[in-house]
Length: 199
Image 1 (cartoon, helix red, strand yellow):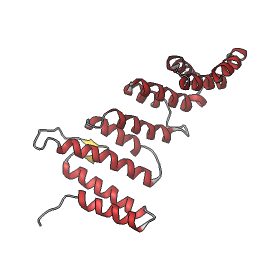
Image 2 (cartoon, helix red, strand yellow):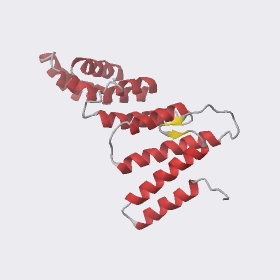
Image 3 (tube, rainbow, N blue to C red):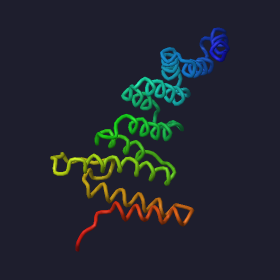
Image 4 (spheres, helix red, strand yellow):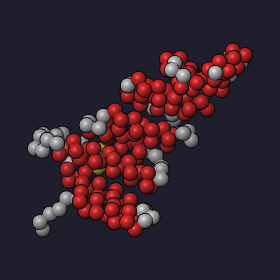
C-alpha cells in the first residue's frame, strides 16, 4: 500500500526527491531491494541534503544482500561536514564488525571509524571493547605466528598492546558506570584482561 501511495506521488512530481526517498524505503521494506537501491542511489547523487538517509538505506540493502564492501562504500558517501557523519561512522563500524571479526585489517577500519568522530564516551568505550576483544582473539589464536607490525586504530596490534587498550576501555567504563555493581564488574574485567608481570 505504501509503495502504491508513494509511487502515485512520485509520478505526479517526478523531480522531487522526498517521494523518491519514501518510495525507496517502501520498496526496501516491501521486498524490492534492487528498486530501492536504485532510488537510494539517485537521491544520494542528486542532492547533498539527501545523502545521509539515502546512504544509510543503500547500506542496509547491501548488508542484507551480503555485500559488506558495498555497504561500507555507501556509508563513505556521507561527507564529514554532514550532521549524519557521526552516525555513518558508527554504522560503518557495525557493518565491518558484522562482516569480519577475524581480520585485523577489518578491525582496524572499524576502530578508525569510531576514533574519527565525537560520540558519547560510554558508547565509544563499548565499541572499543568489542573491537579489541575480537582483535585479541585473533592475535592469541596463533601464538608465535609471524605478524607484521600494525595497529587496530591507535592501539598496537600485539597481545600486550591490545590488553592495555582493553584494560583502559574497561576502566573508562567503570568511571562512567552509574551503579556500584557495574563499576566493580568493569574493574574486574580490566584486571582479568591486563598483562601481569612478575616484577
